[in-house]
Length: 367
Image 1 (tube, rainbow, N blue to C red):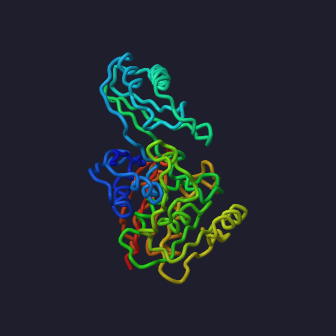
Image 2: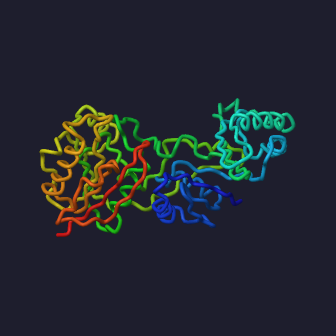
Image 3: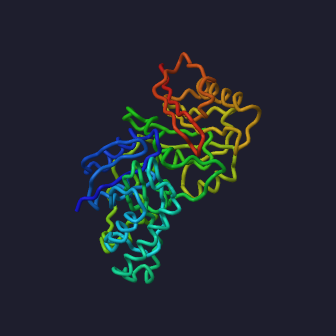
């Protein structure tokens, strides 16, 4: 059985998400990249593999119904006639409704109409009581209306995929895991030999955790598709480890010793208390460095933001001298950093991190 699927991806990372998909889960067909996601056709085995292996998507949706609608009576009729027993596992699902250029613009009334239609449908085709016996969580359905064309999708993921399940301790301003994995793909692009990875301001060590677990299947969490009628009873087999990043070892530094101790105990990562703006971090061999420095908003810094970032930039490139250096900074600071004679710009990527416009820069040492 083939299903039409949509992978939600942070805008700006679509190319990397496609690259990861091809490397780890290449069996999908009719692949189409759009802003904010990737659409494709695949079977349930692919759905399992994608949820376990892909690190960049936020969630995966199943396209289950599409039709044209311009009034509420037709909306009610379509939803009440739908065969809900094929997809529904809980009688009170959550609804995410959005409208663009549609005659039906009131999302509250749309949801109310859908709920009434579902109730009428379940009176004719009642669900099994598994949801009560096994304490299933409500599913989430996405209703999107654009130009009077409605698309109904089922969330197969549940908790967002960036919630990996193997690290729970977080700092004050953690980078989302899927963004960290994307930036690491950019940083390591073209490198084949394993190399040391250093994060000089690691916080809760999201970069390091994502680097060493890039190929590790997610097996410490559940997914929403596991309770769906079309999947229920199917054995979940974790796919084998696949494409890894060329990381020989990973070391993180930070001044927050209390946080590092907790994260190291939970993750087993090599984390060391050190002032990265003072101490030399060069391990004596080629290494790459990646950094998401504090911006002075949620994490306090000494002095003005521009001076702090410029001092960090100059110290890392002139004292530590990594083979490659990638860092995430607010986009309004892009003009602050002039190219070093010893480094060339490999890549820059602009996107949003927690509502803030940021730029990820990757520099490579020339000599």
